[in-house]
Amino acid sequence: MPVYVFEVELVGNIDESLDALFEAGYDDALVRGDDRGGSAGFDREAGTAIEAIVSAIDQAEACGLEVVGVTEDLVTLGEIAERTGRTLAAVENWVKGRRGPGDFPEPRVPRPRAALYSWADVATWLSVHEVFEINPVDLETAHACTVIDAAIRTRRGLRTIPQPDRDRIVKLVA
Image (tube, rainbow, N blue to C red; front, side, top):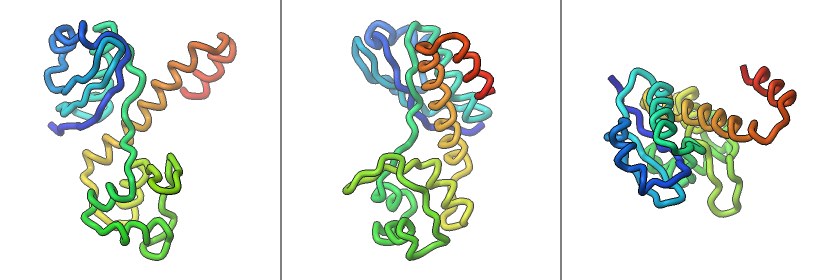
């Protein structure tokens, strides 16, 4: 069975919840935090990335913690270079379209010095264009984190929206 590596962001008293988290199944996680919240990094064995991540969310919520996100792996150009074994100059050439198939993903967080790119988007681009072979488990995890993080943020946002509009959004998502 594959091992999925991901991180969840937690709100609540981590200090008081550590034993309960471990008993609930967080024996495959490195939990960091304090009395306001923190995060848990996982190396979780499961049938699918969705199964791995959702089980971690269910376990945290059963312990009274709120899951506010699943870390989407945002990376710099330097990290892309490191992960692919390419030079920074080679990655910059992909981004600027001077090399490779073009149409490199836009940064999720554009910044002049160190823009942040979605690893899910970059990994897909690398895989689709056969620029670099991506481990299928890593690609599956990146996509699952992106979708589940969006679902969590939507779920949190729905709390502030009046019921008729909430129903419209739920219908849209379904």
